Length: 318
Image (cartoon, rainbow, N blue to C red; front, side, top):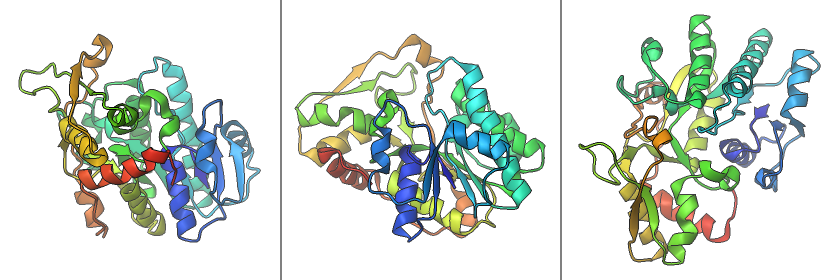
């Protein structure tokens, strides 16, 4: 059972499951007036349900017992001010699904977020003993943090597998509007000899474009997810980044090289509302994932950007 299965990460994980020969999957999502439905084209699954209908049959216990629940469905927009929607959609919905999984005794894998770490003053360590220290900087992150804390406070944290996604990019994110990666947003501009626009820095110890993120390619992400899916005894919280922070300038330069264009970077003002919520640095501590036996390698930024640009050229999908 896969919620958020038509979304960016969800549809790519569905692609991975299909690649591994798994097709008996109930996909749950909210198909609306966006082109998210295109992420399901060419995928194999046993059935599809809209999230509202799925929630009702879960509450009334009208669904057969699945092998596992992979819960990726959430509102991932970071700029909305509707706290009630975040609580209902990201927190309450997740609690209902988790309790159902516990009742049935099946694995529950869910999406947390690196945004829960806030400004990073307490680091980016997925050690659950540090969980209560974090101060998310927007309501999306706080709703994810609320669920992490609910699991911890109720002694459920070691019954689940939580994934703290860092800056994931790659094919199938086309429908996400402003939440698309900078790579996706700027590809056409670069191909057409225009500039790529990066935010100015408002910290004296960080030059424009030197803000850093832990960028991780979707193909590497679904490999990790599949490892955790196939090893349900590996429970707890796991960071999913590369452990190697790279700057926005690195991203921009990688794009210009990938498409064979002359470098042209422009720095623009950040909105005042975003400045207080902006993360200047993220870097995943990957020790937990390594400690449970994951030995896969992550693509270098330049290689993953080059690969992604091949998809962007034709707007093709995984």
